[in-house]
Length: 222
Image (cartoon, rainbow, N blue to C red; front, side, top):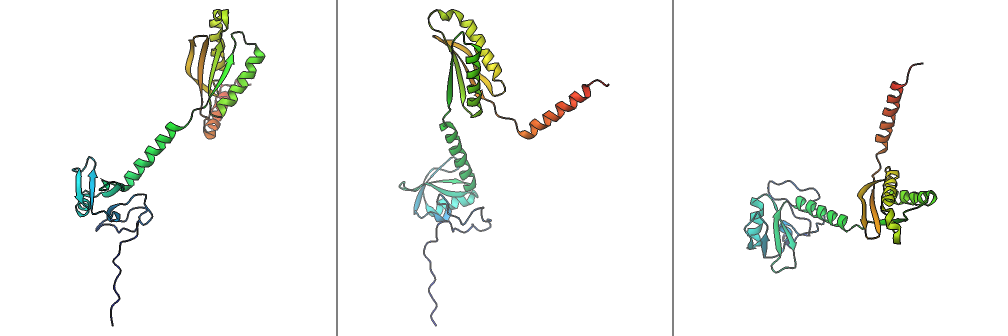
C-alpha cells in the first residue's frame, strides 16, 4: 500500500511554530501585521539596527543571529530589495509602534480656541453674559482667549482693561487656569485660559466629608 505524500508547502502566515525551548508568544497563531521569523520568505535580507552588524545576510544566517540573541527577526520593509529586517522582541516592537502612533495622534489633535472680546468699559450685564459663555467653552474642553480691544484714545484705560481680564480669570478659576497672563499686543490686551480637569467624584465626595467633619469639630458646644 502506497503512502500518501506529505504536504511540504509553505505554512500559512501567522502559523509559525516557536523555536526549540521557546514558549509560544501571546497572540501567536493570529495574523500579525509583519512577517516574522520563519514567515519571511525572502532568500536574503538586509539587517539594520544597533544590536547587529548591518548588512545583507542569507535568511538562514539572519534567523540564526536573531535566535542567538533570543529575539525575533522582523520584516519592516517587505517591498525593499532585499527586504529590510530588524532583530527585536516582537511584542516590544509592537508596543513601541502603538506608543509612537498614539503620540502622533495627540500632536495632530486640533486645539479649539474660543475668543471673547471686551471693551475697556464693559458693563456688568455684558460681562456676566460673556462669563457664562466662557464657562460653557471651558466645560466642553476648549481654550478661551479673552481680550480687551482698545479703540482710539481708549488705550489710556489699559490698566482698567488689565483689571477686567484678571477679574475674568478669577471668576473662571473653577473651570479654567491661566495659561498666559494679560499681554498688550498693539490695540489688544489678551489673556489665555485652559480647561481645568474635573476632579474624580470619589475624591470630591471625600473632600466634602472631610470639610463637614472639620466644621463639626470647630463648631462651639451649645
